[in-house]
Each structure stands twice: as structure tokens, then as C-alpha cells.
Image (tube, rainbow, N blue to C red):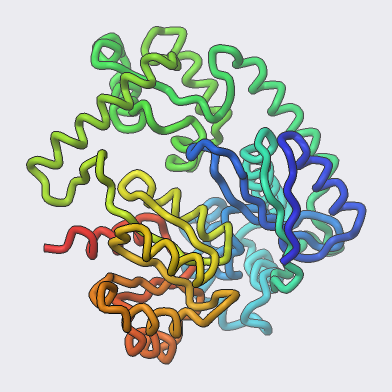
Length: 393
């Protein structure tokens, strides 16, 4: 895939150029910031110079239909999907499956377009203020379009809405500078909170580590609306965004982890995080893995086998995440090579790949892998699997 770096605030110009070039395919975006909190990745799918979808990954037609139904018609979506899957001419077509559900009056094209447009806006908003890297892929099969005329999302409307939202974010500054701001609450603050629901929310989510955008994602909410609510709580003296208190809160969290480690064998020592090596040539996948594991592990990244072998020989790696397909060698061959080296004979190796066939799994087992994780995977699924081998009894 072609790759192009861009600077902060340049993404809008890059997207405008895609519109003019009538681009067809998938645009993968990844931020290239030093801050772990700001490391993100997403996909934007284009059809004839118009964006038709944006999100964390490219969904299958059934995944998208399920998500749309859960939002627009949660009580009927499962039954409707069962019928629609039997009627669809092309089992992989996104548009055909959505069109069948529309003919079944589950929702309308206008509702689908408005919902996905909102997803795209929320996705783009996370990337506009940061430098990043764009990769193009014209091989993605995703035929979504809207209405009888099969149009995409209107870029001018997207820009207008993004500009309006940026102004609303500016109105919150300097008290809440951005969606990356981290809210804080102390025990003294909690005592002041008179609303039980606010207190419960703060106890669960406002921990001095999660940014507004992370809290919003976990709650499936608009980060701007979360920030506007937090401004009210800030004015009431219930929460804070003070940097000094942020550092104090993070130090307290670290100390709490240390204390828990004494009584819980599955806890971690924050001074000596276990070392995990991930080998994958996809920056998107690597970012996902690092974000999922960085709280509990020291994650090293390699894009090819030669880099991986160098790291393995230099660092006391305790677990290896290995992609099946690499630019310089086959993942199974690399696994077999590692297993022939005595000091790596018992190293836990988890094969991470998009292939989900029984034959591939058997080949991986024969080559010496301990487990097989299929892309796309949920972060908590990855963490649980790595925990199993690092903290095995």
C-alpha cells in the first residue's frame, strides 16, 4: 500500500485531494504522535471520490447491518437479519444487505446515511489535530452507497459540521482544551458530589488516566457532549483538569498497582513490566496491539523477521505475537526457526492473523505456536490471551 505522512491540521487538505481524484478504496489513517493517549488508527472507505464509511476497521456486511440495527431498531434487527441473509444475492455485498433491510422497513436510507455520517465526523475529529500517516488500499471490497442514486457522503457537509464542532471545542477552552484532556476526581471531590449518578460515573470512569475521548468511546457517546457535561461538573467543583493533580492521580494509580501485586498473583509490577514482542508489517495492527497491552506490558514492535530476531537476541522477551504473513519470510517458517534455538524453545508464541481456517491453525500448531488469534480481535481478548501465558500458574 502507498503511504504518505502528513502534519497536524493537514488531514483536511489530504481528504479534499482524495475527493478531487475520485478515489476508490480504503484510506487507513494512523496518528504518529509521541503521546500514547493520542495514538489512534481508523479506516475511511471511498467510492468515486466520496466517503461512504468511517470507523475503527472495515466491517463485514453483517457486522455493519447488525450495528445499524442495534442503533435504529434493536428489537427487530436479529430476526430481520435472519431473513435478509437468505434473500441476499451476493453474500458479501454491503449495499444489497442494507437495501433488503430497508425494503423490510427496518430503517430508511436517510437514517443509515445520517448515522454513518455522524460516525465519520466523530472518527475524523480524533485525527484532525495530530500528525499522522495515510495508507491507501484499492483492493477492499465494500460496496456501500446511499439511496437510489447510490451517492456517498457530502464532503462539504462533513467539513461544515467538523468546523462547527471545532468551534464548540474552542468555546470550552482553556478549561477543557481538547478531547484529549484527562478529567480528575479526588476523594474530597467525591464527598462534594450531591448527585448519586454523577458520583457513580466519576468513581468508575474519572481515574486520572482516561482522556475524554477514551471515556466517550467506552460509553459509546459523543466526546463533545461528554466534555460539555464535564464543564458543568468542573464549574460545580466536582472534577478537575489540573496537570499537577493529574500527575498525583497517576502516581496514586501506580502505587495502587504495586499494592495489589502483593496480594494478587495476576497483578503487575509497574517497575518491571513483562516484555512482549509483536511482529506485524501493518502499522494499524501494531498500534492496536500496543494500545491494548501498554498498560500491562512493555511492548516492542517489529515489522519483519530480521528485526524481530534482533530484538529477541537483545531483550528478554517473554511472549511473541507473530503475524502469519510478513514481507521477508513466512510467519510459520519464522516460528519453526525460533523453535530450533534452544533458549526460545519454550517461548510462548501467539499467531495473530486474518486467516481463520482449520488448516492454517493446524500448520501453526505444527510450526510451534501456542495459540491462534484471528484478526480483527477485541483488545480485551488479546489482553486475556497474553495474560494467560505471562501469568500462568
